[in-house]
Structure formats: C-alpha cells, structure tokens
Length: 341
Image (cartoon, rainbow, N blue to C red; front, side):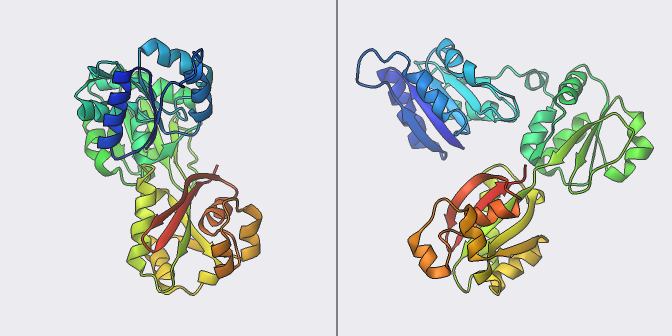
C-alpha cells in the first residue's frame, strides 16, 4: 500500500518514523509547517493526497481526522483506508474503509508495529462472519449495485441463508466462505438459486442472465503492459506480472491480457509466458504508444522508437482504462497495470 502519515506532535512524529522504519509499505510522512498560523495544513494536504494514496494514517485525535477527510468522502468501494493512532501509541483505530479499503488489516498491522491495540468496529468482524465486501477486496471484485450489497450484508448479519455461485477459485477465502455460506458452481444457479434467501453471483468474462434476484459481483479486468530485455525468460515475465498484481491485491483471474511494443513481437520468453498465463497479447506500434504516453524517456525512445512502452501499452489494451500500477521494474522486466473501466 502507498500510505500517507499525518503527525502533529513530537511524539506523533516519533511514532510515524517508527511505522515507516518497520512497515513494508511505501510511506510518506507529513508534519506541521514551520511557519506559524498554518492551522489548516492537514486539510489542504489531505485534499491533495486523498485520491492518490491507498491509506491515510493520522497520529492525532479522531476528531482531527474526521474533519480532515469529511469533505472528500465518496464511496466505500473507492475511498482509501483511514486509520487513527492516538498520540501515546496505545490504540490503532480503523476509521474508514475497513474491508474494501483495508483499514481493518492496516490497523492490525500498525498495532503490531508500534504495540498499539487495534480497534475494529465493523459489524461482521464483531459477529465473526466474513463480509461480502471483504470477499470483494480479497478476490479483486467490484459491483455497481450498492443497494444489493448493503441489503445482503445486513441479511447475513441477521443469519439468513446465502449462496455464492462462482466459477473462479475462492483461494484462501474458500474455507471461510464455506463455513458461513453455501458455495456452488455458476452452472447450478438456475436449479438452486431460488432455494436461498440471498444469492451472490460472481461473473468473470461472460455476463450471467438470470431471473434470480441477486447481488452480481464482477471480476476486475486488468491488463499488463510489458517491457523487457532481449532474451528474457518466461519465468521472469510471469514472476513480474504476479508481483505487480499482488501489489494491488489482485489475482491471476483479474489478468485479461498483456501488451507490449511491436519490437517485442518475436520475444519467445514473452510469448511463452502469454501461453502459460492463458491470456492474449497485443503488440502496438511506436506511433500508437506515443499518442498516449506521458512519462517519456529519451533513452527508451532511442532504443525502440517510443518514449514509453509498458504504461501506454497497458492503457491501450484496457481501452483507455485507469493506470493502477505505474511502470515498475522487476529485474529485467517492467510492468504497468491498467484496469478496464
């Protein structure tokens, strides 16, 4: 995660530095300006970083954090995780986006780092039941039906029956899901869908047509733009892609295609990786990449004729989607991820 820490007092700054030293995530610390009379410094910085960071950590009173983030709240599915640590480092409070944003896990991680007690208030965690929005986060899913998500989440808390119909693997979530819900293949939907009070459908590539009243979750569709050195091995490409996906909590079922420059169309290691990953690959001309590239390099342009490869390739493959992982170097491979909107 990319984390912003806001520390106000001297002791708060010490805690912030301790978190940065001991945590694996990318951390940027913000402290009060030296000039006096800058009471609104937190508010102005939060306005800038709120949409750019995965998590915000306030080492302050809860009220300060609430006032700072309030004008920027949009939706639980897109707001960053927000955690508040008191100035003594005694409590680590999950304040916002506990499940999808990951604030609950972040509060626990910070608690382990500084010796604070995590404070988690989400109802499903208190009841010991796995939440649907946590399943969405862990499996790289999304939905536009917020009303159905709220309705089914409440129903599960009341103890109503629920079934998840899916053809994708549930991974480490599987055992937890089966302990509280029924889990069936998607092909069983028409036969058994009406047998449950609540139904959750996980769509992958093919939309599901059904009369069953259900919450439909869709897999996030992500495309990887690839740059690599000549003679790259297939394993190096696959390892880099997996690492890029993992950095955003995504899985192989979220990967829908690869893309690169025409110059790499005969790179055997890249082609072999594509076959092993069971996805397609598209090669773009230097001219096509130049039209959408922003972070250009003269060195890269001299080599392949385009100022950038992996970022514009990912954006083009995702049909103008959102860049969620910028160009990242993994050994001899560079990867960028873009999500289809």
